[in-house]
Image (cartoon, rainbow, N blue to C red; front, side, top):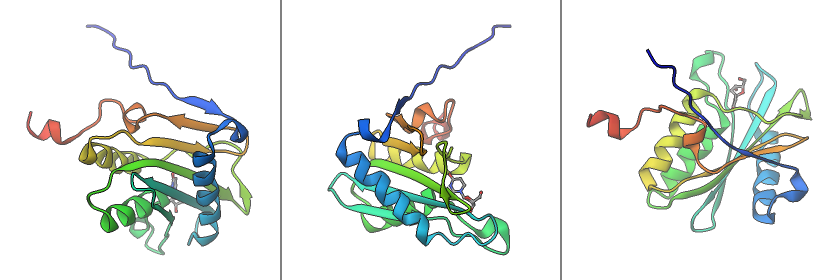
Length: 160
Ligand code: THU
């Protein structure tokens, strides 16, 4: 028996410390929370995507009375962007949330299904995505989705 450890790393920034291109993306994600359809949780999430070609796509969470039929903001935005530009890599993804009308103090942590979809996008384009998880107090910046999803299942596993 041998105990194993997995290290992961990310960087915390204040909003003012971030490069302007990322500040803009976060502002877009915040703006997008206004368009969330979240009548059940009242947790409004916005996600904004910067593509390699400079285009920006945004999405918000879309809930449903049949709860599992809803979808998180990150996947709405990613599927939307990938459907419009299937050949263009995703460069960065920003996420912001509003809880009962107030921006979340701590960064939102994407659910497992969203992490898996983000990872597929990274793998698909063979290019890391910069992930910006924004909270009022600080922003967590990840250089790749792999740091958020260690021991992940990818197409490589299908080939054994
Ligand atoms: N949600 C997101 O859209 N993104 C996340 O990262 C976390 C959760 C949504 C799903 C649901 O509509 C609501 O937030 C509460 O879970």
